[in-house]
Length: 457
Image (cartoon, rainbow, N blue to C red; front, side, top):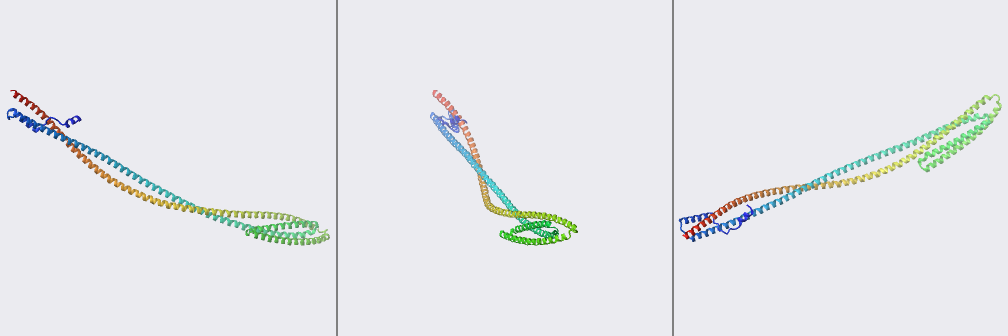
């Protein structure tokens, strides 16, 4: 049905439109009257026309009321449909919002879980780092202890080397004393052999003087060695030992000088006796003189060899003293280095202990944060579960409401279809009424023609 037809149907008609039943009954009466079955006047016909007009007006009013009711019902159904569509859009928006909130809650829960996992990994990494640092500290402590043990062993080795040097020095002193006794014995033998000649005796006296000076130098060197050995007792003790060694050396030199003077006097006396004996036995003592000369040369060579040996011993003694001083200096340096290393290791251990305490505090703090994060994650998961349950309940309610709305919509559509069927029936009745009206108009015209023809006759 288009707009023009709807306006034509809704527009009120000015002509009389009787109902189909009354129109059919009136038409039957008119036909009967024209056929002579019922004799009536013009007034009756006008009355019947007025009745038909009233019936037509009543039918028109009923049709208008029905159309107004149908239009109102259609508007109401359209408004209900619009409301249903609006409610559906609102419900769709609400569902979308709830789904977005659920997704956001799940995202927050996942983020909280990821943050808690990251915090747990960080805590585990810090724990491993602290354990590694503790192992490093223990290794450094073990190395420090090993260094201390090695330093103690080195100090003991230095002390043993010092004791060995002292023992070797004492052995050298004993060997020098033995050599000194041997040289004194040989000197006595030389004095006995030097009585053969005054000049050679003088040369022997000079050699003996040189030997005595060498012995004095050796004794002075031995005194310096004794001073070096006393260095461990302090400076005052070393000075005391040096003075005592000097006094002993001076007394030994005086005794040796007096002994040598006595021996020289004895040698001069023996030389004079030897000159007398030489003068007495010069003729038959030439082989003995040659033998004595050879013995004197041998004694000279032996003295030279002994002199070289004494110089070698002095050099070795000086080297031993230098080596001992080096060992002492090295031992002092090792002690200083060991003490400095011990201080450094103690400082490092204290710093590591402070770091370990800080790490433990940090680990305890992070453990508290982890517990808080786990509690927050649990709260977030509980809130997400509650939100999800609420969302499911609301979604179920929305689905039920939507199903109810669908049922209402189906009912309204069925009612609309029934109204459409009723409207089509009414349209058919209106069409039938219009046909009856046209038929009535034709009958009225025909009756009017017959009446006019009857009046004309």
